[in-house]
Image (cartoon, rainbow, N blue to C red; front, side, top):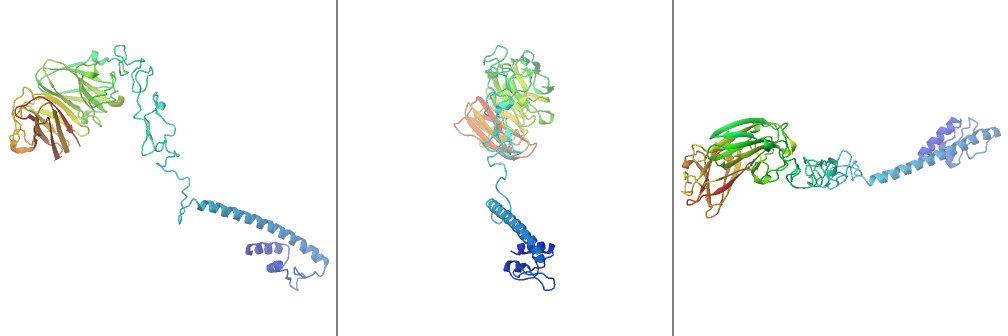
Length: 435
């Protein structure tokens, strides 16, 4: 009412009326005796005054009431809006919760590819795969297509396939894994290898791609390869590795006894970084083995390949193992035809043995031997010094032995003896778990 009174007062002042605002509503006289006017409830003294003041006042009142009505309507609308807003505002706060977008609410909001199980319509077909399944939403609400897989044999060449002729048979130009029949195996790089260490530099850039490796620790080896046909001139253990310092791409490394047959693959190593792969296996003279330098996910680049042929017979010629962190490393061999050179402090381990010289990048390491005989494992800081023994494991009448070494310094060397109980010998598979 105070606002209305002010509006009326302003309007009547504009028409020269000096009536008191309260008198308008109280129907009492409000004109002063000096201006010749009359109050709202007092008869006028002349018709001219009646005609002059009543019409504008009535019009002003009508206009004012209309304005008041409009004002009240606006206030009502404002109150309604405020009420609606209050239902969406936390008590005591001014932050509106309705419509707030955040990753993890299950809704694909602006700036998000997906949210939780809501992939926003995305699937693997966007990248040329026939099977739509495999895509998933990351914790950052981004689509990850890394698990999309082709279906070999459907007559559609999909990503990660080099060909697809509608079948999964070899010998027709497109092998059972949907890659062109290996051409690198027709012209492998020959290497005659004697005892000692040799470095071979190369690059896979521009080379042909053979086929992905799906066993023995490797997968998605779809990059181009370089194949080496290594013929040893002496008995021993062949170890090959790719140093991280000189490998420029995400590489893979594996042995095969028959170049173009995946089933003949014996060992494969795929580190999570550029380089760092290592494979080690026993070989016999004049029988070639095929060593393949591959690339993960189609990658290629240059490398320095290290090749070592050692007997592992004793401390004069241990088998070198360089560990640069990452995935587990496997080495296979046999103690058959070896001499017995080392025992544990408790005198266990009187079987033939093989010694490895292990250089680590630092941290905690576990060495596991899955053997075909009752095995013993002995770790030393100094190869020929039994007093420097770090650990020894003789599990008794079981085939598997294990040693864990904690806190090894970066660049430090440990000598690991693969031994047997009571003269036993046989094949073994050594796995080294890296930090």
